[in-house]
Image (cartoon, rainbow, N blue to C red; front, top):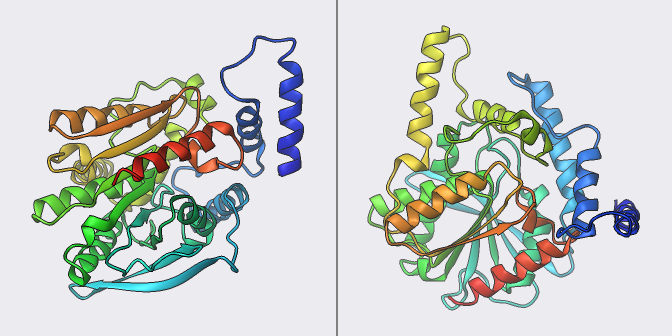
Length: 349
């Protein structure tokens, strides 16, 4: 893939001498073209069966493991840990790259990472390389939460998993929130938003700050103006794909008659949607989104909600860039720049 990326970059740079230049780097344009050419395509059909779902997960793993950096077992330590609260236990992983204190050290700040994947895919195997990079880049340990995936577990289970981890941490150290930087991508952003809302409702302490990459904020998509041409141009996540992922996450009995099915569907939309809850008491947020992606409007909704509640938020919009583009720092200068800005934000705390 690296060779293809270099060849496509060179072709784009050559053609730029004869065409109007773009504000987007040739590296990024080449990277986006590679993703769009991937076979099989990154797509999950509506009402997919188990075989189709497993194929989608396999494709996702194939794509993202090739795009994220590989973890170096000699420098990056990955250890399984279990968090327990109220009889519920959640598997997680501690990730340390280079010399630093363990996350349990009272003097050590760390990232609590909730991964994305539309609630359907994503695990330590996919994310370990990226999280090792984050640990080295920000010089702090990373805790990866291995929450239950849909449709085997619905989205409520995933929320209970992340709440369990956070409450277990507070029980371990009542002041641990003073050392936590929350971070996520895509649907992991929705889990972080609901986690903060639940923590505030329970009058528990929130983390120092949140860094959200292309967060999923409004799961209803009621405010999205659908344009088929624009949707087809979106790299990675189209509206149709995300709608199909959402259906898997709710996992409603398909044997219900049509009226009852959609009644239950809409009921769950409201119940899970962060937009329907309070945004008071949030820590400072740093949000990055691409202007070419589906979740641009979600990020704007989040900014407005935070400001309405006198919170602090920085929203960075990457012009013409795709979903979660900062995660692909190996492939474009835009992503590298975004990661440097994230580091500067984190170093304030």
